[in-house]
Length: 388
Ligand SMILES: C[S@@+](CC[C@H](N)C(=O)[O-])C[C@H]1O[C@@H](n2cnc3c(N)ncnc32)[C@H](O)[C@@H]1O
Image (cartoon, rainbow, N blue to C red):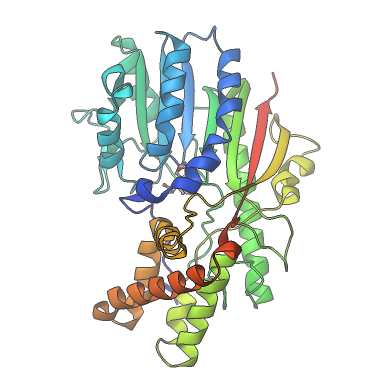
């Protein structure tokens, strides 16, 4: 079935309002990013690509710090995301930022003939166009240039080979583009304990491994010698069948609600099967795998450290109802469009209602046992460096 489940297209337009866990996770990279930036103090232009930046809201603090660190010397900072990313929203947020807005020139400009627009704002669509637009802005005298490039990170370079000082990323590289007919029976998150189908499970595992290898290889190619790849990504402490990383508890609730709805005839099994979040929470071993396979490096890129960390739930509130409402709503930022598309299998008119009921059921479960969801965020900080 060709349209068995929706594919990754980008985040909700209002992603940033409910991205507190992603913010906390991305912030774990900042000390290392700043330290690395200091090491490039003598570079005429510091080039940073923020991979999977979404609307950029969670990057502003870092960008301000980098602008201050550069102290008037050129900085090229680029948002890289899918072509359908809310580029106009990202652009608007940059303009409204009292520090970045007056300091930065965003490319592409509306007049740039290389700009493309998939309906959500102008961006550049290739590493070469991205680099050319950034360099032209620098050559015209801009000190801080912010590039916007809609380039799927697993398919190509986001900047020309050997030009990037730092590739940084938060809560992005767990997304997996797997074949659209690959399902995840009984589990919205592939590979989690409720996922019963071993053939599917190993297909997801293979796709995630192959994509991670490709992601890392492309970053290795982008970086200058001595450049850094610094990533915060959702992770798992244990491999299958006990893979229970990020959102383990809320995923269990989602699976339970869908199973109950199927059992009572409220929705069809095919509708429940279409609710699949195409992600894979890698273990430390899986993160290290391409490097081990390469005898310690991937095309010259070496892992300096991998650390797992758990985040306290940023939506926690002493009032269980408030906690449940805000936490469940935050899941809509990444799951909303995906859940709705799956529920349209029950008819356009029912999709909105089902989404509302789904959220209400989840809220009730979270409110009934808030502590179970308190530490439901497991992440990995991955720090890699390209050999000199
Ligand atoms: C959860 S958001 C994280 C945003 C931001 N980095 C943060 O920490 O808040 C993940 C973003 O990564 C993008 N993304 C995921 N996989 C991607 C890929 N392979 N290529 C480009 N963008 C990707 C999504 O479209 C989304 O905007």
